[in-house]
Image 1: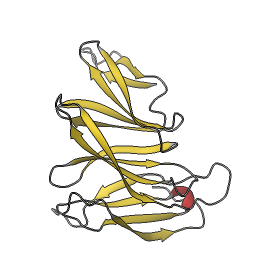
Image 2: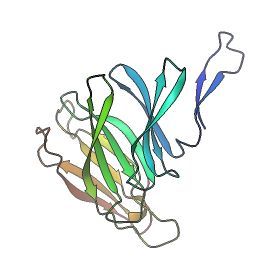
Image 3: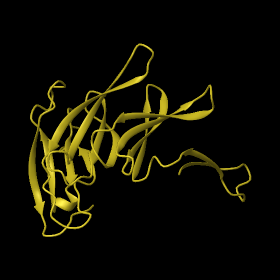
Length: 196
């Protein structure tokens, strides 16, 4: 369950619990504000889908929307600053298929009703997962700027997990919003799994 906790006026009492979702956010979730609305992004490992939960003021419930169900088991999903105040949903899956296991970015735009739309871009695939029971890759991805105060598309640090390595993905054209090409640079290799 994904549960929303709110404090009571009497601080000595337990917090109020509201179940937002059943069997959705089983590995990771993150919160973001899209066009003035707070939403929850869920990396659904067991359901093999990337989804968004948004509060519906009319029904008083949380609406569940599947964004993508083609990536296999999901691991990480969070909205990051893509430079020039652009928001992008940065996603990793967790697969042992080298053609699928990778890092993905969903460019966020809005339709005329103000609802978010997501366009998928492949930033990197090709993690070669080591053999073994339950092995998969990658793990978490972290967007960052190499210099303080720098603008433009971020660099991305990726934990290869079952691939036994860590990569930095470097944007090929940092200031070109239409270019989604990244160059992988391996910065660490290990005989076992990597995690951070």
